Image (cartoon, rainbow, N blue to C red; front, side, top):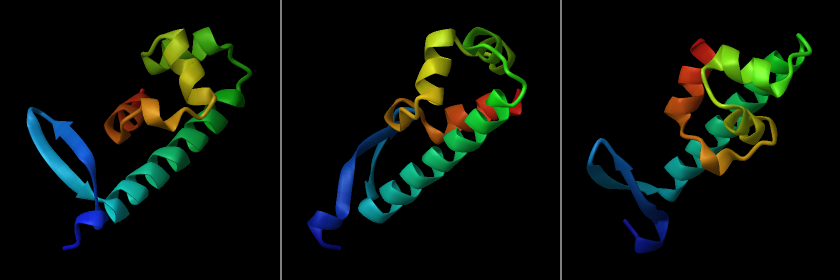
Amino acid sequence: MMAGLWGRLLTCGGLVTRLPRTQQAANLRARAELMQKIAECLKQPDWTQAEAASRCGVTQPRMNDLLRGRVSRFTLDALVNSRRR
């Protein structure tokens, strides 16, 4: 494969790997879509950020990051786990 198709290093459980840029783009898109869906679910009951954070098992500043769409601060795993609660 061409070197330009490979993205930055990612770590997972102590393993270091490189993801192709197409996989990075898919991961980013999935995180963004999931964040939007979580934010929609949390806005409907008119909860404060603190209430939403408590129900999702995260801190209020972390909830603020999620609601403001700061995708780079979340892994796909973290988003899936917060949605399960």
